[in-house]
Image 1 (cartoon, helix red, strand yellow):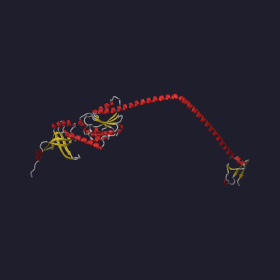
Image 2: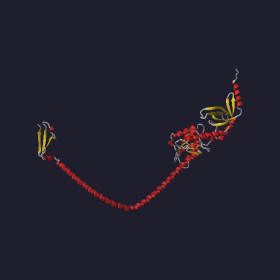
Image 3: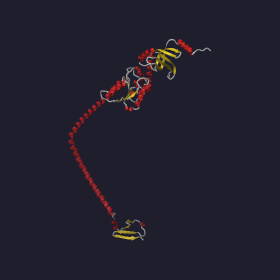
Length: 410
């Protein structure tokens, strides 16, 4: 049996590949991992192709961008797309297929087409907006009423962001002396962790939303490439469904991010966000001042009307008083006559009633009863009303009209 060494077989494979796949190819793929070997070093990629569901790999291969080529491609890609080349991007690369006896199959990258990636980014952004539209949430936050006096402000930003300092200084140093209550809920404003960090800050605000009037998401300036993290479906969903108005002042001049689209109000910079809130409070203060002025004027007018009315009444009061006095005196005379008649009638009725009571009392006098031949029998001081109440030997007293008789029961 004829055999070959592994090295010989590897060289045969390399020869077959170089003979069968000469030159370069433009390949569409997605970056699944990326590693740069130090400043100015090589860039090592892992490229994949997924099935339509995005859950299963159909192909996977390593790719190398040598340092001299990487320096050129990196700058051109960022200038063209406004984005850093990063994991998850779909790219169109010009590659050469190589097979190394130790490192195996790989692709050597010579060029990149930025327009392909820009088209994919735009497509992905359109898909996110279409999904938000289908979910019916794009306009939810804008439907919330902006408070008339938004002075309690929850801020989502990085503590070290220049935009955060500009925002606070603009409100604290306002020329009108308005006071604002502000609290920072720290979050990352760029990079892979931005989505989770901002959502965590929003959740913290939502747990105490009765303490705040509005939420402001701000960051300082920076390259457009740092803003792709705000084209996030989950971050946009949280903003769209948030129970307080959300203002975004991310600091960019390009097209709105997805988060800008679903926010209540979008401004270009943190300073513009502060100016928006300040203008809202100023408008409310002026409206209240105008209302107070109108109320004072209305009160003065009413006081003048009432003053004239009182003066008119003062001129008619003497004659009215005399007329009232005559009517009251006449009415009092009538009342006094009715009261006198009522009292006399009451006395007459009471005297008659007392006479009747006296007659009844007199007719019930025991002396009068005895005088008519009746008697009263008592035992031990109590009247005897029944013979059954007496026993043999009892002493009883019989009282007549002219004396008493004592008896013993035999």
